[in-house]
Length: 318
Image 1 (cartoon, rainbow, N blue to C red):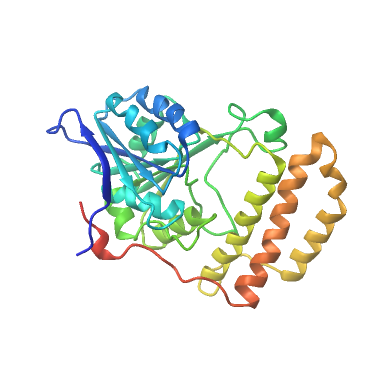
Image 2: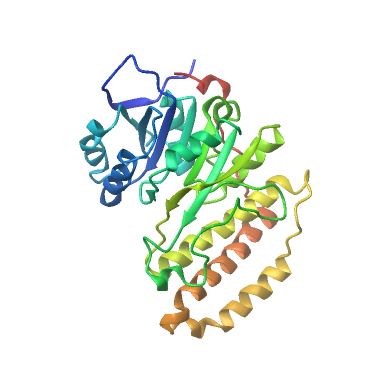
């Protein structure tokens, strides 16, 4: 039998009270932003009893101390150690395993949830097996960081013309469904693990809904280099996603030649990196173009696609 998650800290104000909702926050070195997120959760407009589960993915800063300081604001509060495997997927999975609620809501340590976030997602889970909410960009990020992106997402995500998916930083899932699916696949260590999870969920016959009232203020990388690097890995992981599903499902085609052509066009426009007004959008686009080419080379041509890595049935403890 698999061992349960390693509990670092646990406090419950009323041990006999039923917990309907668990908010899981995966975090790595998030001491500078976690307190703001916890303050937003403490101010939620909901009558549903909920707990907070911090899943610490091997932080080397004061993340755990910041978390414990906020514990008294919540009916139940747990910190688990998920540092055994680096990555947000493993951290989410360990947090879900430690959760007591029937509904698991997931947000990030560097974002800020809106006052009705818990209520909106929990209400959605009364109707669907999993739900996604919206990301707002224009509150935590200056205009030059937002660039040409829409200020608020208007629906579930789509990629390759296949099934929709929910943003991993704003998602709710019924706990038994999450565990039955093996949680998030930790082989997607830098992007598209939420698309893979949503696809597996829907292909298994579960439902995915949209909750526009569940909004997170989403914090983006503040510098152009960080945005380019993030998009590089997102793009690379998108090719891994395609490789996993394209042989059995009707995904849109991808082209290595077309990817090279796109990269060349982006490189020819590198002068936009000099201009403040276009720097971030160009960095984001160039990073994506480079990541797609890298994904083709690594996963399609060299055959280095990692195997899926999800929880097995013995992990369904607690």
